[in-house]
Image (tube, helix red, strand yellow):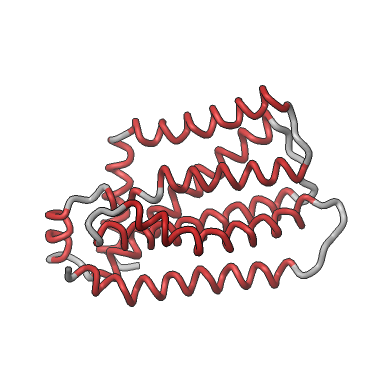
Length: 217
């Protein structure tokens, strides 16, 4: 990684740390969601647990990652334009989002296991799937946030574009997690993992191609 990329990631991390109310707000949302589910249904069965976990991850991504570009002022974009390449700026935002959502995913998994139980037979595999899911959701929502921010801060555009992109990601993650939860080994999980990886690579390539044009607007 180049020094400008590291500097941009460090800048975003420092801003996130100084604005602790945003970070703690996401943590409060995760904790409140898990606690309410626990009070209403106790420890659900494995399939329900899996669905609740990924729904929580989706809303955490929307609340924490999707704002990465939308919180930037237009004048600040012009300033960044004089410092770094648009591809470097986009990759820095994606890397920052990945680090943020990875930490939130681990906190979510810890809270789920404490309050709702952990109906997972292959814990290491599920942790890896959670990490891959965090990377996928971060990449997708950062890409959507970049488009929405350069289209007049239109958050509705992100919701419209996000549905066809996020739906296959969540379906693949849910199927992968089911294989980790099942007590019986299920083959073919690597096919889903490769499909998810290819989708992430496609989104990154599209972002690197399209964002320089959006940057010039």
